[in-house]
Length: 262
Image 1 (tube, rainbow, N blue to C red):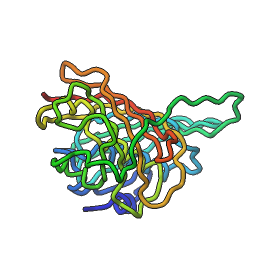
Image 2 (tube, helix red, strand yellow; image 1 turned 180 degrees about the vertical axis):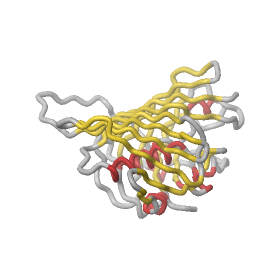
Image 3 (tube, rainbow, N blue to C red; image 1 turned 180 degrees about the horizontal axis):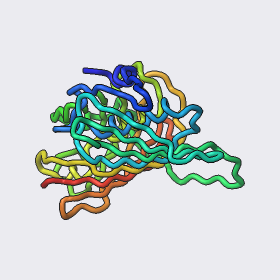
């Protein structure tokens, strides 16, 4: 397998665009795992635009399949005093695969502060069983460690489509970064799959997220995640996703729209 850090290190710049090679172990069916293509878009923007403030918000549209050699083309849409909007297109041999709109914004002094994203109570990762049970998961899933901390499991024929799990990269040399977090955040299957009795195809269409500071941590830190399907029907599912550090600090609030072929 090609570790995430090796794949990122292999990105090369050609003019204003970047080239990367995605190996088969990062596949999800006939295309690349969406969390990886999203992370590649963010990494390309960070390399292309100097002195970017932190990433605060991102939207990804997974337009078509991609695998093997891909080209990533970032473009500044607007740069203001504290905010930078960047568009990124990731292209494969069949054309556009992923389109991203990224918002980078510097911190500003504020008279107000509020937070209402408490992490749910969870046993420590080492006390939690494997998330997938006896199912090995898709090819890309071997890059991550998953532990079920509550809620349901995929393919459990459940009536409540919700997950609560610990997850981390298996690449122990990685360290904490925004691209690493985004690559991890899409790793669980859609919460709708908790209702499935057997495997069935799915495809994420759009993914939007609001992001908070990623604390510097060595190695591959555990992240706690909840994922809850809100509406399932007519071949589609919407879901909410939240990620915290092991200490309970919020890192991401996200939403996805997913096509379900069952």
